[in-house]
Amino acid sequence: MKHIARKRFGQHFLTDGAIIDGIVDAIAPLAGEPMVEIGPGLAALTQPLVERLGHLNVIELDRDLAVRLRAHGHLNVIESDVLRVDFTALAQDLKVPRLRVVGNLPYNISSPILFHLLDHVAVIQDQHFMLQKEVIDRMVAKPSTSDYGRLSVMLQWRYDMENVLFVPPQSFEPPPRVDSAVVRMVPLATPPALDLRLLEEMVQVAFSQRRKLLRHTLGRWLEARGFAGSFDTQRRAEEVPVSQYVALVQSL
Image (tube, rainbow, N blue to C red; front, side, top):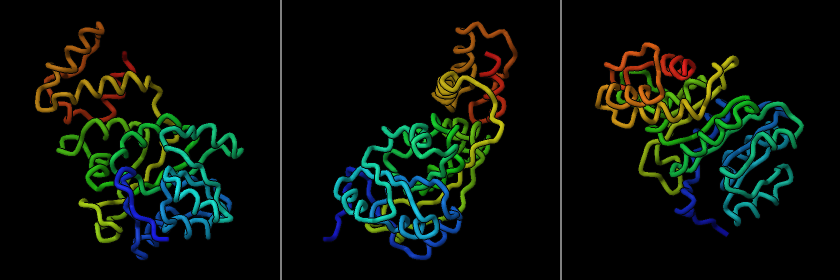
């Protein structure tokens, strides 16, 4: 029975064989590696992955698709909203130090998924995700560019990232209205020690009015915290490199 893509789940199923091969090559799975796929859907990526791995863990919210996936003998199916999955506990259950995570993420909740995984980054070896190209452009953006923003800072302080593959709309069924791409995210081996929640609050304040100089936003926030150090607030938020945001939050 043909599965109809469900809009409420943001489903767009990958059907382009060449693109699928390109994604699998970028992931480069090795037999026996502990890997988790988010949103396997109709198993377009799942099947070539499991052929190389031997076994694969998959997270699927759609009940009908989860039933289909359970019929596959080499899959551990976790029927759940990915935002409810404890990846740290999953690594412990699988008795592995770190997981490889892949997936064609639902574009309507891609940012919440990325931030959820950030909470479990200590047990993640790497991540390969297909996302809206516009989102990946923001993730990997450099300072002083229009794409550089909150998402850039909140991910770049912790990951080394690169856009590895362009995916056009016609590679999906039904085709999305946007271009897609695949991003590789590798957690930094020696990340800076900082208060993540404080960084999140600070960056949100900084970019809340990105066209204004920081003295109107971050400057007032720092004053309220009694900050006595030096930080140039005669700049816009997009002009401050990630390293300077990190150093500022550490000084607090």
